[in-house]
Length: 219
Image 1 (spheres, rainbow, N blue to C red):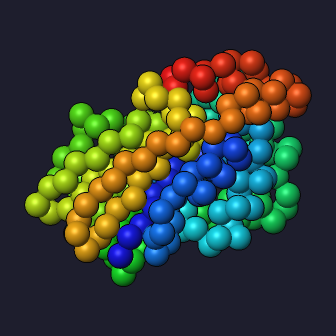
Image 2 (image 1 turned 90 degrees about the horizontal axis):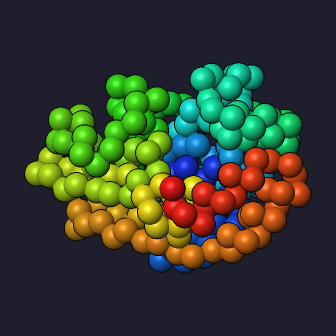
């Protein structure tokens, strides 16, 4: 079984389109949260994943939108949350609200969380990966850090597919990962997309300029 793994789309439709077009044949796609936030296509990204029935967990930006609060977000994150809340259709908001914090798929072989198995808001960077994070599943998928990496242990695989819509690992290209559960192998992928289009749209809708400029830096 081959899975396409994505996370942290953050309302970046050109990046999501590029990832889905570039992805090789897989049985299905899973998402580790933060479909919305920051970038200017929250409703389009939610609609895309909902129509594809992509198993998804809620990220902190998703929950901020559905809860009607910005939590302790900085000004860039808060602006993206406010924008998404105004842009989402009732159907998209319902779908986002329905997302669980944790879910298992593939008959329990795959577990999805956003930040950490014990805390959806905890950043779990590659240096924090360990087999102790696994609890019986073959594959644990985490997002939140926007840093692409993975580790293969005797007990299973721990991975972060990186961010589709706002990479922060120094590579501005959109990130995703493909996992072969039969071979227990991982292929990390990056794909370029039209960052200029995103930057122009950020300006058009009045979002903070820094949301666009950081996309060129992958930071």
